[in-house]
Image 1 (cartoon, helix red, strand yellow):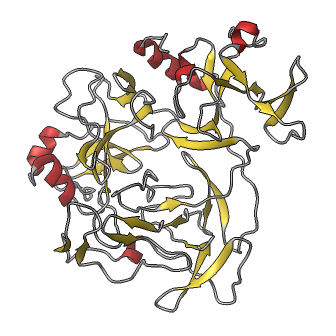
Image 2 (cartoon, one colour; image 1 turned 90 degrees about the horizontal axis):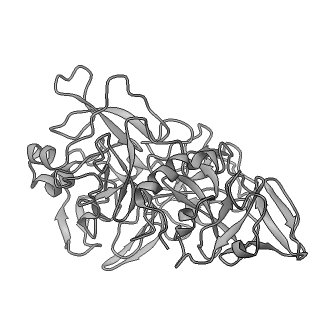
Image 3 (tube, one colour; image 1 turned 180 degrees about the vertical axis):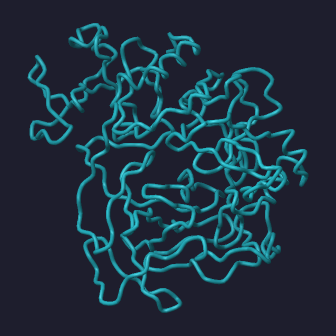
Amino acid sequence: MMRASLAGLALLFACAGATAAGSGKEAWIPEPMPKGFRVERTVIDGPVFADAKGHTLYRWPFKVMRNGITGDPRGESNCGSEPARLSGGLMSPYPPGLLMPELDTRPACTDLWPPALAADGAKDVGRWSIITRKDGRRQWAIDGAALYTSVLDRRPGDLIGSDSGNHRGDLPAMRDPVGPAADLPPGFAVTSTHRGRVLRTERGFSVYAPDAGGPAAAGCDADCLRVWQPLPAPASARARGDWKLITRETGELQWSFRGQPLFRYLPDPRPRAQDGTDEPGWHLVYVQEAPPVPAEFTVQPTTGGLVVADANGRTIYTYACGDDAPDQLGCDHPTQTQVYRLALCGAGSAERCLKNFPYVPAARGARASGLWSVVSINPLTGRFAAAGDPGAQKVWAYRDRPVYTYAGDERPGDINADNYGELRAQRQGYNAIWLRNDFTREEG
């Protein structure tokens, strides 16, 4: 059901912050932790566990791939201190035994992912346990999964080391942030998106609330109830925190969150669909919203949904990459090897890459906003530029990774480079930054 035009949707999303959860922060369920650890709030993934400096803790998920296994088994760490020299052959079409690129500077797994080491005398606490690494050092684990920090994270709450968390099929087994359980009633879940932490039902359907001053603000009448289902609470439910109970005229209990009565839109065709936002006077419910995109960018309607675009309406793309070594290191950050990106976008030619996927320049005086920052890049190497480098460009970055437009996009709304790359850009390649894409594929 698409009653609103896509152009209208862009306006709807631009105004959504005024009617959604606003500045609220996500609550979590407290649990015992070892000394020296804490919970840190992050912009897009909610509460995460962190070390004493506030650096996010990650796990390396154990994964059976087409041609082998990778990641950490329960109670063990496979993240070693020697650089991997040969490909593992884990992901088709790459065979094992190929020399990895830039061997003279290739880091070891522990160079990028320092283990969260346990102090002498430390003991297990709750879900937290201590495992013994192959080198004899003691490392913290949670639910048996060994814990690490990322050298890319510099400030408390950074999640630069994290990827999308999508580890299916032949995709690399990258690292996931680890956090406490969200404080939600039974029947609800929360999902990370580019717009923030959105509330879902346990089955994955979107949760909505009426706008203040909208047609359903005073109550959902009989016509309204034909398509909007109040989300029920059991008779044993009790109010807590942001969660309250409403007694309906029928005597049934309904959940509300931060003063908003909660509903499901029955015509939503599948989990993650957001057709209810096409209905005037309704919005998605966020437990925590991400900061808006910088003022230099726009929200652009496309045939697939809503994307972040530049001032001229050209779609903005990010580049993601995970290599095929046994330690599955990232290859999409300016501090990491650029050979994969250069091969994909320009057959090894930096000049051709700049023509096909130019960086998004930052205007003078542009400032960071949330997950967006301005970085100095050497365009010929793809690396951060050294101080005083005459060829340096100030460009926009998302999660510390430069962003691009695509020369093959001719008009505003074109998304010709979305999924551009290997395994539909999931092993390495380019993807649009989707603010809404329930029409064609899962949102990020």
